Length: 143
Image 1 (cartoon, rainbow, N blue to C red):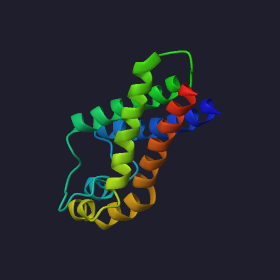
Image 2 (tube, helix red, strand yellow):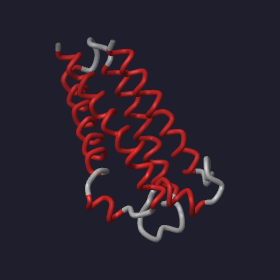
Image 3 (cartoon, rainbow, N blue to C red):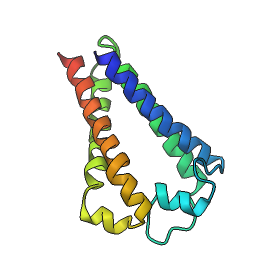
Image 4 (cartoon, rainbow, N blue to C red):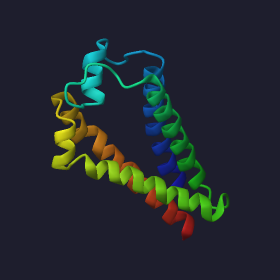
């Protein structure tokens, strides 16, 4: 069961990583207009351009690494305490991002309508599910 959960988590994190990797190289997939893409995936007030490419590359690497951690957590015999601790840290990061997405403060920071819609329907729920997935994988490791 844990490999099933880890595999789905990896697929989601890999997709996120690949999108950020494309943005790191200046591509505007899946939206051809950079301003509209920035408004849709970043959402900060009056945003005109995507964040620096290095930031997108860092997110691409981090989300890919998180996916690898999910797969590693599915193996009960590897990694020991530190892998479980890293899994809990990743759970906290994803849960925090998921919860923040539903706060009035975050709505004030990211008021762009396209982002708000996607954040409520996709980004925040996905982060919550990933966070819960990491908790479940750590739980399965410890039991």
